[in-house]
Amino acid sequence: MTDESLLDAWRRGDRTLGNELFARHIRSVSRFFRTKVPDAAEDLTQQTFLALLDPARIPTVSFRAYLFGIARNQLLMHLRGKTRAAARFDPLTHSAPDAGASPVRVAQAGEQSRALAVALQKLPVDYQVALELHYFDGLSVAEISEVVGKPAGTIKSLLSRGRDLLRERIAELVGDEVLVASLHGELDRWMAARRDDEA
Image 1 (cartoon, rainbow, N blue to C red):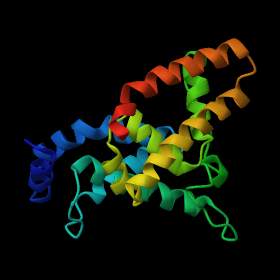
Image 2: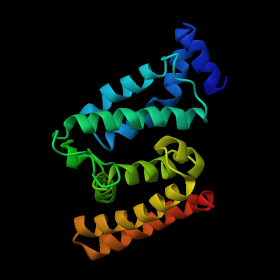
Image 3: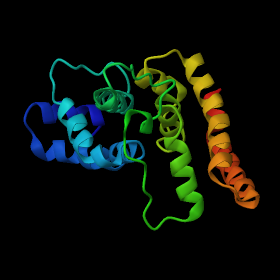
Image 4: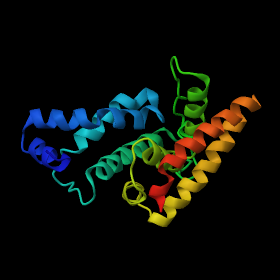
């Protein structure tokens, strides 16, 4: 069954098919939040799936774009709630830690994985979201455009600038030039595998 069919059945009360939809996407949604707000990831994941049941919400895009659009909205509401009233949280200029989110902790991960996770979290939220959805979850530029609510050209710019910012953050975090070069090599291979999808 398609995701859309599962969602429709779940909304009509079929918990078994709702559980199937949940099982299909729980890992990617959970990772989406763990890399930004690890302490709130579980609650935000639950809120995202519960929001799917709202009959007023009608998917007009691919299911994954719809799901991550809800997840991004949940994330921004959470981060704005943590930001002092005097400050306005802007996902294009502020990272999750800027709003007071706990830093990512990568248990039992290698130095490269830890450096990448920390560097990603230091990016402004919309750069991090665009990079992760494109490279980790395989969303197209058009789908990310729906998630973030910005034109496809802007998403291409977010991805391009995001890659540059990520390299800069890694260089700032890692003093070892050999490790920096190694990480940059891994990033280039990782990114090249999907770069054609941005055309």
